[in-house]
Image 1 (cartoon, rainbow, N blue to C red):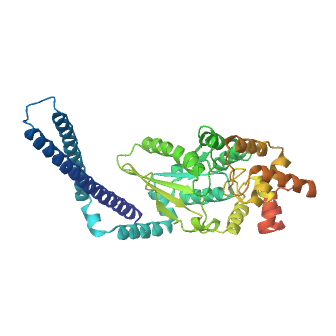
Image 2 (spheres, rainbow, N blue to C red; image 1 turned 180 degrees about the horizontal axis):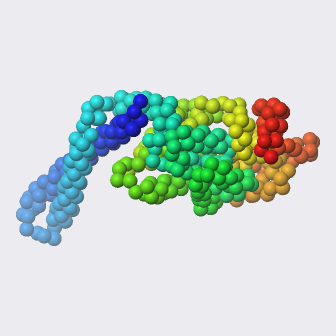
Image 3 (cartoon, rainbow, N blue to C red; image 1 turned 30 degrees about the vertical axis):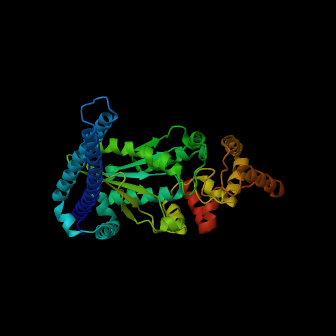
Length: 410
């Protein structure tokens, strides 16, 4: 397929959808303004009749004040009508400008279907997608999925002859993360010689919780929106401006999201239009390049290519997220606490103190104090947790693969 034509079609459909939305909003605004205008006119006529019945000459009468108030409401309504009409004209102009796309895909369902179909086909042609992009941004957490996503993105960019388009971005959540995450993310990017940027949200995760006096949860994932998505927007804007293009830039945002991780992630497409970040000067696509990989396949990629992974995976923890992830279950949190004990990290008490200070439980069903108590009990019964480098590979791929990896990596 012609990648550039597909991207232009996606942009035309996006503009048509925006135009349709603006048209409906303008029509609603006009109807509302007209209703307010009619109501004001009725009120104005009422007070005109009242003043006329009183003789219409006493300027100090209550009727005259009411008339002035009604006239003021009437003028405001007229102004609203004029603004609504202006919005309607602008929406009509946009509809006219994108009339071919609007006529071809007249309904929201058809526009969504065509966009999804085109994006799915583009995802099949990774090299062509990398070649068509003006900027490729890898959002890396330094975790196992991120490094495999980085490796595959770099491979596609190299095949397309455009490695210079690739950049890596890491959101540092501060003391909430395991030690060495930021440094590992930098080393992973340096391996491929791609520019690396650290975004540090003010206050980090714990500062956000302190300010809001509330922990995030599955329904209110403030850590994702406040600490990751919001801070990266201005960076993308600055990078697009640096390109100095006189046309809309094509920006591909690479994420290490796998469908096997959860039901919600399974429903995510491999390639999606980021309507929140897309604007007139940039078309932003979210590329879940490893969406179809299993956890086993991720570890196979790591072993086969000698990719450096964080040693926290060797403890048995499944993800390199925050030390205490608000989406984790009790077993995961207990293991994380025991690992903190083994590494002599003060985070368990720091989190528990914050929980008491804000008066909001880390999880709805239990507190962190309960998690810490259970962890201490298990340490007392079984001894501290121990692990060796390569245990994650031994668990998923066997000891022979782990030994080869460690020998090659060393």
